[in-house]
Image (cartoon, rainbow, N blue to C red; front, side, top):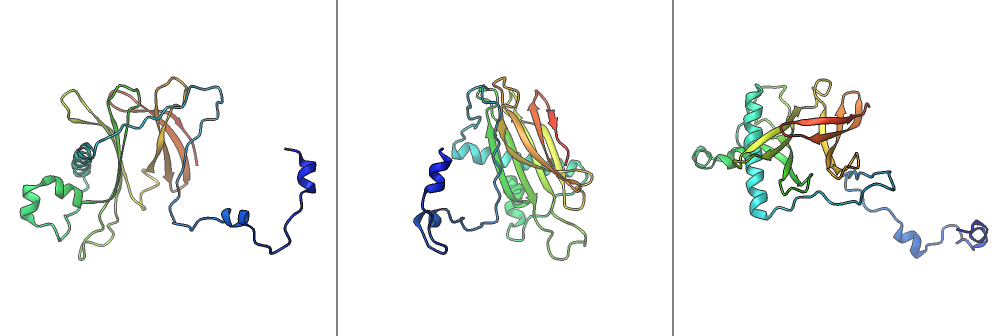
Length: 222
């Protein structure tokens, strides 16, 4: 760019409205902040998406299985699962356990990745337990959940990582927010990028998906 030419370009008078100014006006704030990863190595490998495309029926199946696994893990960790909402009858719950699991959680998000291009999905689910019903003991707050899993040879879900926290225990267990899958070390294989938020602040962490767990490649500090 020639800065001398730019300096000689006539500028609009103060207060004048132009089409450029209108197009540059910020969009209405929706209250949702999206974070996008970027790799700074200009000579790195070609960027390829790691998204694993799921058909609607497959997405519903995996979502139900992940929620059922989350409900089991919460109970195993000593935190009783919240009761189903009043709109779910006991008869319906007994006939459809998946519906019971779905009713226990809110803000459910499921993402699927093929990190090694092997056509084997790695599933990442985030959710929050429902608000305690009226009359529940005071002091209970919603639990924030992050689960990473994939299917084994038998088609069953295998847990790779599970995190559970709430607004009162961020000093013990940070909140895990999935950002995306990235090739952090340039080997062509994708890793999972999370933002970890504790009572001290937030930082970023990169995990490699191994056979039975997540291995930390990088863990930043707030």
